[in-house]
Amino acid sequence: MVRVGVDIAKQVVHVHAVDGAGRRVVARALKRDQFLPWCTQPLPAGCLVAMEGRGGKNDATDAAAICEAASRPQMRFVPIKTTVQQGLMALHAIREGFKQDRTARTNRIRGVLPGVLRASSASAS
Image 1: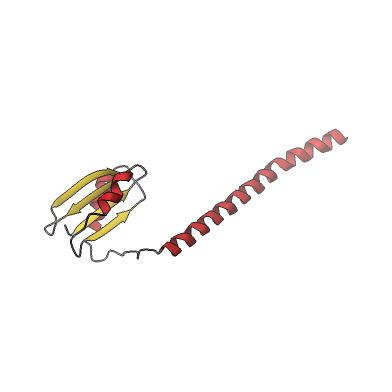
Image 2 (image 1 turned 120 degrees about the horizontal axis):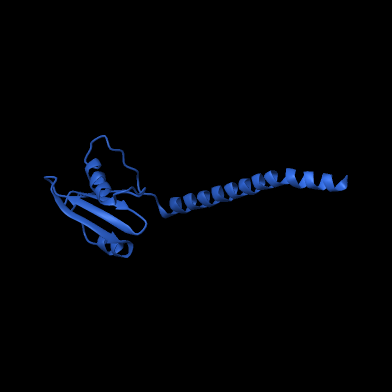
């Protein structure tokens, strides 16, 4: 096994692995609770693991495409983030969510306010 392509979906993780000749040696769909034990199995030295988690219509073919793309010399890889980096990213995502919620509330108030003001001015006359 020289390359492994992994497509991470909500419920099922698809794994596709090839040998040095490009022949498929693994093509499996694993439930999320089965994936971590599968990951703990030792891989051959120099084995490249490529992952993607956007989710498409056919995750099995996505895993095969990820495995193929990993063999391309122009492929750019993202370094693994530390737990501190992941924590900071989570905090930023939560903060962005709070900002979006605040903007949505403000816009709802702005949408309702003109009707309330018209109703109150009509009752005052």
